[in-house]
Every structure is written in structure tokens, then in C-alpha cells.
Length: 69
Image 1 (tube, rainbow, N blue to C red):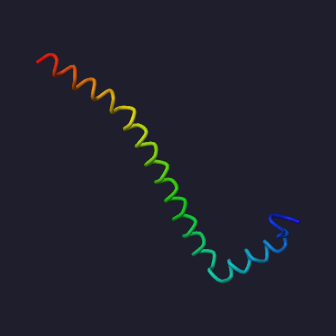
Image 2 (cartoon, rainbow, N blue to C red; image 1 turned 180 degrees about the vertical axis):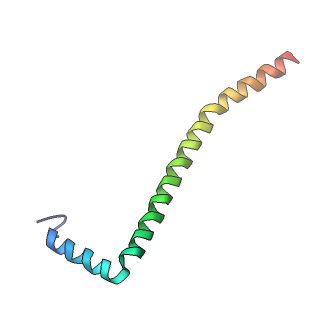
Image 3 (cartoon, rainbow, N blue to C red; image 1 turned 45 degrees about the vertical axis):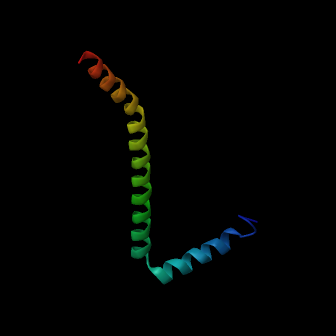
């Protein structure tokens, strides 16, 4: 028994049928698009965390500039 009652042979047969229906080029394109979307999502998360860390520093610098005026 494999994953949830599906054996490895059944899974391979399903994958072959999907490859025959969609073609390898289309599946490769879908995989590339999905990978690009995941990469963009990770970059957006990293940008947000960097912005969140630098925001308190920017506020403290603005406060120091106002004190010197």
C-alpha cells in the first residue's frame, strides 16, 4: 500500500495518462509557472519582513531629526 491506499503502480499509470493528455511541454510550462509563482511569493515575504525591520529605525531617525530642529 502506498499513499492513502494508492499503490506506486497506480500512481505511475495516472502520471503516464496525464503526460499523454497534456504533453510534456505543457506540463513543463505549468511547472515553470508554478515555480515562478512560489519564488515570487517567497521574495514578497522576504521584502515585507525587511520593510518591517527597517520601519522602526526610520521612525527613530525621523524623531531625532525633529528633536534637532
